[in-house]
Length: 512
Image (cartoon, rainbow, N blue to C red; front, side, top):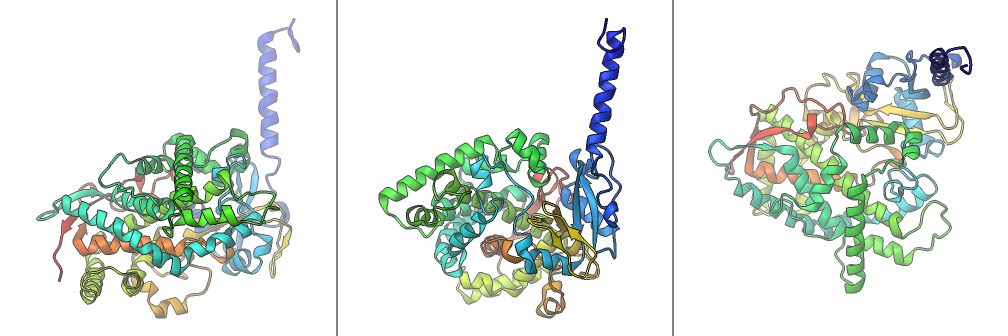
C-alpha cells in the first residue's frame, strides 16, 4: 500500500507535481510587485524572472540592462525581476543624480556583495557597507592623491622600461607581428600593480608563468562556473552566502594572502619605505584607533582585502580599457596618427623622457581615453540598495528599503540624446566645449558621487602610460584574427572581448 494511492508510482507523480506547483507558486509570489504600484514592469517568466539570457550566459548583464534602457524610451524607471526578486532600473538622469549624489545617504550601499565570511572578498571598498565603508575610504584616500602618485611614478617607469624592452625583443620591423593585445596590456598592468601595491618587481614579460599574472588570469577567467560565480556576486547575493562563493577564487585568495603577509612582515622588519600601498596599510595596522567598527578590523584578512581588490581591479580594468582603445585606434588610423603626433611632440619637448606632468598634459590622449571609457566602461552598470524607504522627489514612486536599484551606464553612454551617433568612436565628444555643454550624470565610467571609484586617477595614469609607450613605438592595425566589429563576451561580469582575447598587428614606427 502506497502513502497516498494504491500505487507507489502514482504517489511519486503526485509528490513531484506538488513540489513543482509549490516551487512555481513560491517563485512567482512577488510577480506584479511593480504593477501593483502603478509602475511599468517587464513581464517575467517563472523561475528566471527577466534574467534568463544572463543565467544561461547568452548575454552579458551590462547589455541586458542596456537593452531595457533602450526599449523603455521616455520612461523614468521600469521594474524587472532577477529570479523572483523585484529590481528597479532607473533611466531618468535627475533621479540617477538623486540616488548617486544628492540623496546618497539613502543609497550608501551597493546591492552586490561577496560572502561576509570571505573577508578578503568582502571587506574591501567595493563591497563592504556603511559605516565601515566610509571609515576605510577616508583612510585609503591619501594613497590616491596626486602627491602619492608622483612618488609612485618612478616605480611605474620601471615597468614602462620592461614593456619597452619586450616590444624591442619582438622585432616588429617590416610588416610587424600579430599580438594578443589583452595579454600584453594585462602583463604591463599586473607589473604596475605588483610594484605599486605589493612592492615587488614582478616583470611578467620576462617570466610568462609569473605567479602574479597566473593568478590574476584565474580571477577573471570566465569559464562557465567562474562566470556564474561572478554573476551571483553582482545579482544574487543570497546565493553567494549560501554557497560560500569566494570573490577571488580559492587559489588566488591563498596566493594573495601568502604574498601580502610575506611582504608586510619583511617591510616591518626592514623599515623600508617605498611609497606604495603596503606602506599605507602598515600605517593603518599600527596607528588605527577605530576599534569600535563592528564590520571591520585593521588587521588580518580585512587589511589584506584592500591590497587584493587593488590588485584585481587595477590590472583588469586598465588592461581591458587599453585593449579597446588600441582596437578603436586600429579601426581609425587617422585618429591614431593624430594621437601619435601629439605624443611625439611631447616627447621631443622632454628630450624623450616620460614625466608625470606630461602624461596629464596631453589633451587628445585624454579625449581618446574618455571616448574609450564611454563605449567600453569596465563595468557597464551601477547598482545601489535603498537602506531605508525613499520617496522619490517629483515622481509618484516609493522605493522600499532593501530594493535593488540599477543604473545602466551603457544605456546612458549610448543614448543619442547625449551622444549623437553613439556607435561611432569620436574623441571630439570630449573636447572642452562638448564637455561643458553635456548635462551631468550621463557619463560616469568610474561611477559618480561618494561611491565613485577611489582609484580612477591611478587607473587613468596607468592606461595613458600604456598607450603613450605603445604608440610611441608601434603602429597598430587590424589583422586577420581581429573580429570586426568587436564581440563582447556574454559570460563576462565586466566588459571584455569574446573569450578575453583581441588580436592586432603591431609594426615598429619611427619618430615623425
